[in-house]
Image (cartoon, rainbow, N blue to C red; front, side, top):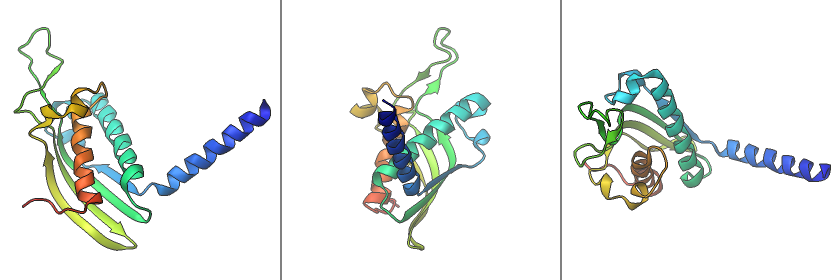
Length: 166
């Protein structure tokens, strides 16, 4: 029994070390208290959202970035999908999703490999068709529309190395 626990612990340590060795992404939220989205004005909501998005970016890093690549992303502004409609007495704390309220992130990024800059830029990422996303719509995950949009952007920019549209 103890041997089994020891082996499981050893495997876990090696997996964590390997995951940490690949961590090639840094995400910085620049002055998030000044973002346009209402949830960033509340310190507790802001902290929770930043933690969730940072974890999500880390999964994108481990899934998509190649060995030796380093990516730095600065989040300059963020608007989450939907808006609060305070005039709705029973739903004043619920985000109402509409075609006119897509998620929107202003990002600055630098992708490097072996010290060379592969891609660098600043852009606003948004998805006007976010309500049509079957992955996000069927998900019970928090920030599903934002994550779906960011995943698609990440793939286009850093896997396919497509420059942003002018």
